[in-house]
Amino acid sequence: MFQGYTQGAIDFLWGLKLNNERAWFQEHKQEFTDLVDRPTRELATQLTEDMTEAFPRLGLELKVSRIYRDARRLFGRGPYKDHLWFSLRKPGEQDGRIPCFWFEIAPDHYGYGMGCWEMLPTTMAKLRARIDRDPKLVEKLALRHAIDALPERERMVILLRFYRNFTQDRVSKVLGVSQVQVSRIERRAVAHLREALTE
Image (tube, rainbow, N blue to C red; front, side):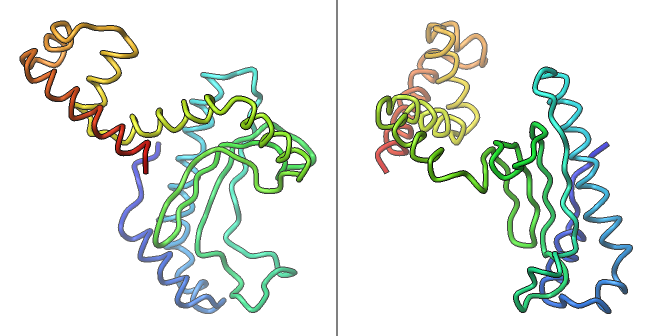
């Protein structure tokens, strides 16, 4: 079961970035296996199980990247990647054109999301036209992202008040604070959302 990444994983990835050569990697291969590869595969397996349970009809397939670069595409870089990623996607021949869920860990960041990396220009043109016809979809996504970025208590008040239609009095009972405090938190949260959506 995935227990998280340690500082040792980040230290290894920095070491690999700064010493990207076979001799260094061979000397530190066990660190790679224990600190980076194994936790990444544990996280990937756990997420695959959770996603398959939640969405069995998607038939998602797990793909974990290799640490070795494709020798045909080194372009003066070392033989190893300084990051590791995995993706969950529906099986298909044109992998880069199929939307996937992904996670990546690198020495200076981690990232996750959903998307494609080799979308055809015609498909992108259709997507842009769809957004132009109905921008509300993108506006909803922007609002959801802004809500997710709020501090926990502000997020809870917004979700309960505007998505569950709770009164301020009912929210105060759920959160164990006064109705006046709920009102203040709500005003602060709305101000934060306005600020985030006008940037």
